[in-house]
Image (cartoon, rainbow, N blue to C red; front, side, top):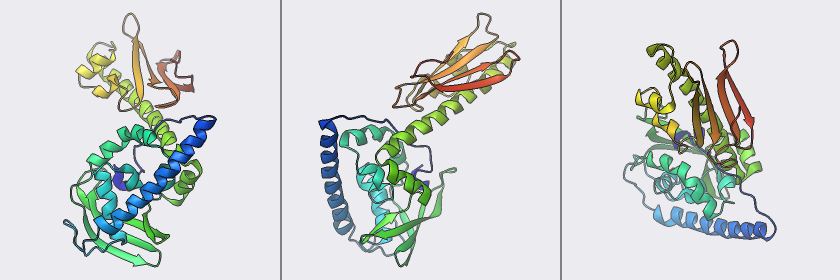
Length: 293
């Protein structure tokens, strides 16, 4: 996932609201965290990574170089040191203001990404031109999971190299939204996943009805028949709860999706049903987390 860094499915979360003294306390805590993280990152680049050659690399890697920054990034990511990893990217404005509690909340989304990082990162090339650099690294492809050569762009900022994980337009959004970026992105992603799951439920119902004389089924039956993933029974992966309501004769149905935690895992409620002419229709609305009818 993380190889096309955050052009993917992730993320993320909740918008937290603070008031009064709590706001100032959060700001002070965030500032201390930022300073400590910068120090840890500097030490990692200067000390941990001072080896000229790293196992898996096919070029000479010098400390504090673009290639070294890429190597440290993936090492931190695989080690689930997410703050240290993201500080080496242009996602930094979205991570530096997060408290430890907020970052822990994000881990549920980051950890699957960390598990996909190979044990050894093979770095095959490094080109530096002024304050810009390109590092060629062998990473799993998003679609095939096969190791393929990919190029990562970096730029120099205050004598340190930064991995460019998002384009300039997205970077401006990140700078504007700061720590809320991941939270908003998570909700947006869950909205897309809820729509996709309702579409899958619709297709599964079509297949089931063709095989069962026009009768529809509930979610457990669709899963049992292998027509739906088990994810449909849990909000863990998509942040949404799904309900299929069958008519008495099982010849019609409605499918609904509501956020597991309103404002944190999603804001929109969804309803899939057929209109009077038996045409499928998907409705969506911010309904405070309640079912649409």
